[in-house]
Image (cartoon, rainbow, N blue to C red; front, side, top):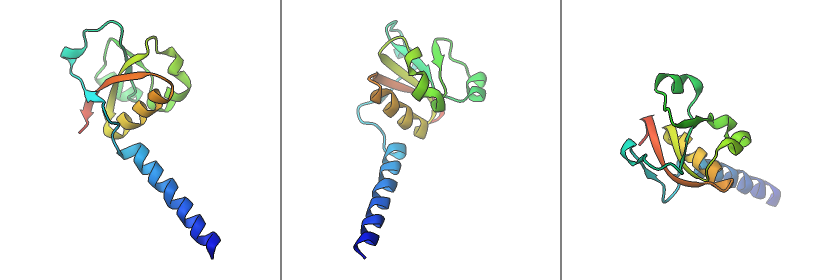
Length: 115
């Protein structure tokens, strides 16, 4: 019986961690506008899918879709980053991945449906 309770507890912890990673916003990261984009030492990383990026392109951004960010993060030239995202879940996941690899995320820009 104790093994059953332990298994249920571990399963609940995994579910809570997955929920936290996706839906809880990263603290201290602010939304930036195009007016704030004057710095030349900041990399702009567009994590939208290819078809979303083609509809509303950002000329200064490096385009690395979110699923490829884990293995292509070395292509980002500067350690200070502004992330261009399509929605709040992509925002949370991409910011956490970049912070894990040592990037300093200065902010995010929402292309469409971010809250």
